[in-house]
Length: 277
Image: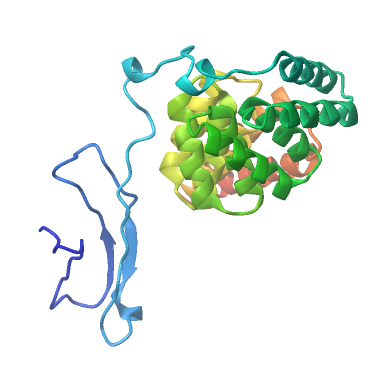
């Protein structure tokens, strides 16, 4: 069935009950949508509106990635030597955990060259680490106005949006960051978490597993989020095993005690489920 010129469908004479709605785009078969649960018994006056959003898959063909290529925005920059020096000094100070001095140097670099989107992004990362999410997001957005394909800024803005519970916006920016640079485990870890927060379990699982393939250590927290996916699927043994894998990698995690209890609870639920079979 095709939509009208406004993209709307209408089904008449359906029996009351619960339905799962899917959609495809004949002109672009690669597009997909998450299944939408619709319960017509809760509809007002027998009418129920269901909104469906078609999306492109997260993973592109491998030969479409362009790792290591410098963008036009970067290649055409004419950064003054003084601004570049301040930026490089800021990076060094940041690595040495001298945040205040690093911030001052980032500020200097940006004052000398306002279009320095790399410095804006690094300053935003610093601000984000200090919990100044509003200021960090503003810097990321400013950097993206200068170069809307800069993956570090897209990833940083996505993180800020996750912290602010703007999960739809986070997914959009993190997917764009992944397209620009497919080798950073953190992008997929964050994208998995954002999808999980929206109860999009299959995309979340895909992203989290891929994050672990790229970096078992740096994306270790993906095991905790995968445990939530397994628990949702009533796979309690797998959920417990996933928590165990995380604790093996991070035995001194701040929430290790609560995670051990979670693991124990899920193993007990797995045992109960086996005994009832």
